[in-house]
Length: 272
Image (tube, helix red, strand yellow):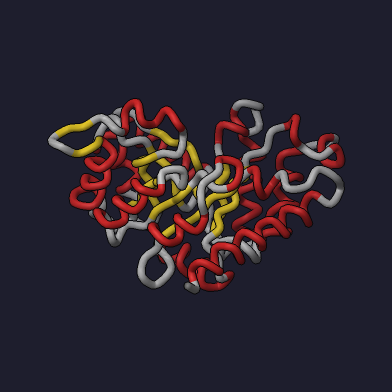
């Protein structure tokens, strides 16, 4: 079972398109876990326990761990997800992009050290930067295309041969890079018109969609413009809106309630 098949099975099992972003920051952790020997892991463990029935995947952002010297807690978190909810895949959000020999080591790190089911990658350096990841055929490779941050327009909107750069990226993935049928695109919820265009351009590629919740993306438009006709085809990420839904000792229960609420909101639009 490759990544996209595992993701689809989890989505059907939990009736969910929700991806929970596990992006802890020590200053934001509830006081009840700050004193733990491994506070990031303890926080994540309780979040996973509370949300695993409401999500289709998890997405830890590696920088939140590396910046605090807590890479061991990132690995512990991924290992715990595989143990606690083995049917729920893990996307390691690293946005790697480098020359082939370096990319090969990054791919080995993600898939063989951290045992992630998928990664995010940056296509700016072309196929050299992406191929080492794509060659792991059972793993998912989610390629930055139209990102949710405001300054993405500085580069992604630049035109070449009458098309913006992000459309060229999408067509490369669609026509050349998806040789193992394990590629997808990152498409931000904050740009619904572009999301619609990309779905028309790439009717069979799955999308990871960040930007709902704290960034203000419209869930209804994501479902309307991004989903396949069968109601699947997108994974909708929420990080802060889920993991920091509560600040007290009941933080995990609050996260579970937030994940369930988002799942039900998404499903209300999928059923229309």
